[in-house]
Image (cartoon, rainbow, N blue to C red; front, side, top):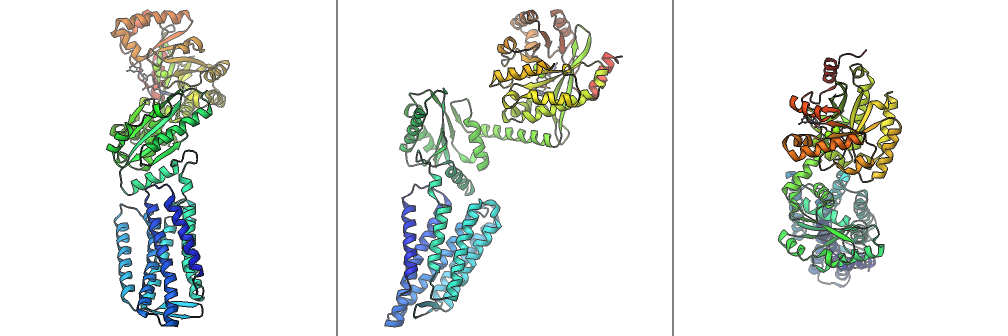
Length: 625
Ligand code: C2E
Ligand code: MG
Ligand code: MG
């Protein structure tokens, strides 16, 4: 009898079935739909074999024709179901969930399927068997063929239409699966003795299983936990179908660099085991030293998280600490992108326990908005440099100005640096931004007008963080040469909003610039950020007393004593002093009496654009001969 191929296919499907059932499961929509397709394929093959046997028995040995007809009908109904399952598997993850037309498509295909199945059941069916040719025919069979063809073509069309939404591997696997099916049906139509369709569908399931539902990609080989890929699939799935979940994440920080690799691995394994032992919820290893567990609701997460004594169970005897991140409700974030951005941002937090709430998510959005603002300003050339002149007490003129960056928004409004510099320092955008500011300063100086009104030097702010990413000596020297500017015209103010990680490197870079004639000052002195290390060990010539320090001088007697003492100390160290934030004539008088070299403040001028600075210098300094 012509059932060899179907028996082989049945064996293959059975093998996939066993493997699928044995593997560690993650609750993903695609996996559920794959399972449905697998069951349909399994049922279809059994009834394919049964129908061939019964048709032969009825035709040759007079077996009850009614039973044979019913079995033939069940077979073609299952065949159509299989096609439908394939279409649902392909389209569910691709079609949008929030669009009315997509819902309509889903409902219509559902109705067509049900109507088709009823038609197959009620319409007449015939069958024939001679030699190795066995087939059914009649209106019922025709409906099955038409519907199957519709499903296969719909699957192919959907896959092609949404190819940009899926990885190349998925695209190829889906087309291969449906293509093999179509080809087998065509061959079987021309050569009816070759009953290929059942085998082709089993072969298609093999392709899907290996390429798309392959469990090894989702399991971390060393710990047996789910991988980042699995987490990504899970999170996308939940957001797509609007299901909330809660998440507990733990990151182990090995404090010393000297922790032995084996000890680290041991700690990782113990942590993994501790997580698995906690319960049926899926646990993931999302990085070498980062783990998470997902829960269906926050109560469960809080209950389990309080049981997780990560430090005690996993890493109690080695120098490590943990950062724990709790996300009680995934719907706090707008989608997978924001979810992962949140995860990566706050896992780097200094705090031990971070719990997601609306405020933290808002902060993240704000940070992201600022990042985009900086990027746009850079690409659309909306970075502007303002200048604030300093009063030189000894020479009674304004021969130095500080360059202060601003971003001009599309609506013309200015964004002050306090909003975007901290974000730029953290994101690394401080590099292109710093370079842009420096180039603009060079452009300005190269025109020569400022010099003719008595401006000798421009102070350009440079974040200590800039030394973490690159060597600023490179671009500074390059631009000085390109614009033919005396290095002595530039003084770099080190602002320490973020501490440099590598002070030795910073020192080498500073010395290189100093050798070439560029000088340095230390900004922000008197805030918590200024570091004694800088003025003791770094080649700094000028100290800038921060606004807050100056304000303190006038409001607080202790600060007044500290500042007076510091002026003395710095003068003994041969350094010059700039005081910032001077707003009144009285304050100017006090500072002059204290003996500072430069005074900066709104009393003289706010930071202003180039042309206003030039007008100011012309009026206050006059034209130099
Ligand atoms: P900073 O370098 O300490 O700059 C002095 C700040 O004090 C400026 O604020 C200036 O407008 C303000 N200021 C000056 N005189 C007075 C005064 O009399 N009263 C008051 N209330 N404020 C006064 P701005 O321009 O908003 O800059 C803020 C900070 O942003 C700067 O502090 C600096 O740390 C940073 N920044 C500015 N431009 C750049 C840049 O190009 N690169 C880097 N890395 N940081 C920059
Ligand atoms: Mg400054
Ligand atoms: Mg300052």
